[in-house]
Amino acid sequence: MADVPSEPAGAGGDGPSAAALAIDREAARAINQRIFDTSLDLILVADRQGNFIRVSPSSLSIIGHAPEQMVGRNGVEFVHPDDLENTRDEMRQARRSRTTRNFE
Image (tube, rainbow, N blue to C red; front, side, top):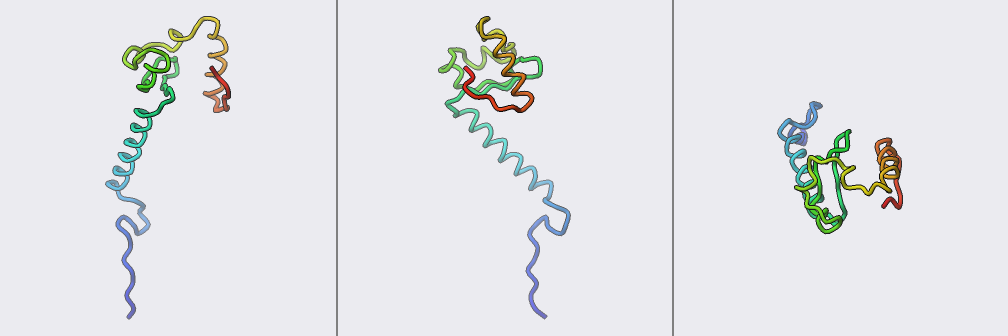
């Protein structure tokens, strides 16, 4: 009788184990956090009302506000009144997954 290779852990049609999925989620979270913390670009995460939930550390060098000054506040507070309507239009398009180019 020939040797049959053993199946990888978690194989057998049941998919990855819960432990393997947890490890993958943690690895993805760590990568996400590293990108967020080290990006030279401004990264903002806002809720549906426009309140900042997360702000990347680059905010201080880019717009002069530290993340802790922005989290919990509405994005409208940081937009010049002359730019508000254009900003709102761009945000609507972003929510609809449309590509935005040259937005300042």
